[in-house]
Image 1 (tube, rainbow, N blue to C red):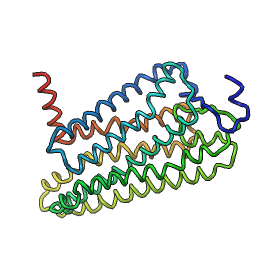
Image 2: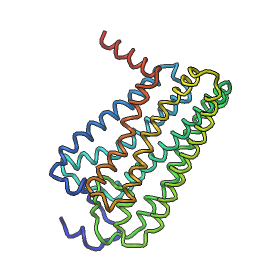
Image 3: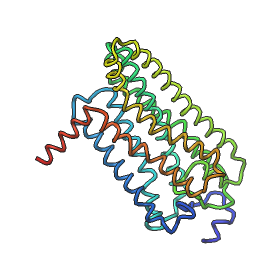
Image 4: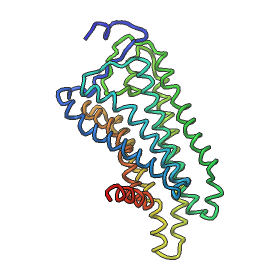
Length: 315
C-alpha cells in the first residue's frame, strides 16, 4: 500500500474499500450468493414493473406504489453491488472520493424513499379498508404522483447533508475504508475533526424516518384492524385482512434488517467485523430480493398475470 494512505491530506482523491476484511481469500466464494441475490432483485423488480405496465387492471394506487418501490430497490441494489463485485472479482478497491460520496448519497436516499413508500402503502390500505367507497376519489392518480414526489424530495433533502458534511471534513489519518461500500459512519470516522454533527444528524434522520414512518404505519394498521374486527363474519375478516398480507410481509422484510443492523451497531464490539459487514450488505439487498417475490406470490392479480405470461411463452 502506498504511503499516501497514511500521510496527511485534506481531500483524498480516492478511498480504498477493503471489501470484507479478514475474508479476502474467500471473496470469490462470497460473491456467488450476493451476485445471485442481485440477479434475482434485478429480474424480480423489472418483472413487477413490466406486469404493472402491461396489465390495465393493475393501474391503481397500490401497484403504482409497488412500482415506486421496485425502482427504489433497483437503484439501491445497483448502487452497491457492481462495485462490491468488482472488489471481490478483480480486487478493484479504489473508489474516487466524489464517487464514494455519491454512492453514500444514493444508498441512504433510497433507503429513506423505501421507508416512505411503505408508509404510503399503509395509507393506501387504510383508505381501501376503512373508506372503500372513497378510495378512488381520495387516492387519484395526481394524488399518488404527489405522494411519490414527496417521498423523493424527502429522501433527497434529508440525506443531502451526509455527503455535504463528509466533503467538508479534513481527512488526515487514512483513506482506507474497512467496508465493501461507502457506509456513512465508516467514511466519517476517517476524518480528523470533530464529526459529532454528522453522528447526531444521522441519529435524527434515523428517528425521523424509521421512527415516524413506523408510527404512522402502526396508526394505519390499528384503524385497519378496528375496521376488520367490526365486519360481521370471520370469513369477511380473513378475506379483508389478506389484502394487507403482502404489505405486512414487505414491512417485515424491510424493517427487520434495519432493527437487526441497529442491534449490531449497538453491540458491535461483540460481533466480528467480517460478520458485521456481511450482514450490512445482506440487509440492504434482502428487501430488494424479497419484495417482488412477496408480491408475486401473494398478490393474485400479479401471480395470475405472471403465470399467463409464462404459459403463453411455453405454448
